[in-house]
Length: 170
Image 1: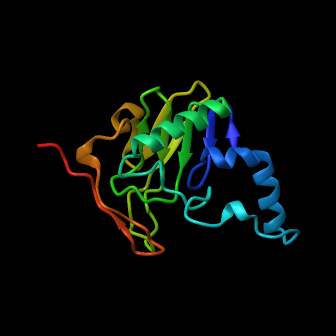
Image 2 (image 1 turned 180 degrees about the horizontal axis):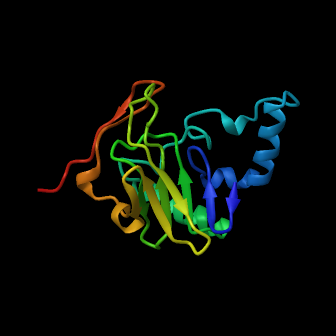
């Protein structure tokens, strides 16, 4: 889904997904969910828009950050909002060298997942971003970009496979 300069997707979008097109992916997925078509191939595998974690913590690789730039540029967007990978320290973002953003919003708040922080991302019409918490609003600048000190191990809830945290600088 794209609203203005913001793209919302569960896991993330890669350039190969854009070849199908957002509207076409939504059409095929809707048909499948309504039992009016087969499960689309682009929904399968760890790099599908549902399951990919390329832009989540630990920080994206330089190649993933570059691809995020290209994807957002092709869509005429400046930010992508994703879930799927619990962020143990709450909602945060990565900003590319060209100023494009990915906001990681899965806090694992469900008691069935990891009882993470209760937070949501507010994107205002004027483009300002705020993280809303039970204790009040947190300006985007406090959560963006992530710092090495905030990188912690991230585990895939489905498989139990963990991605080790990046070492913190001395």
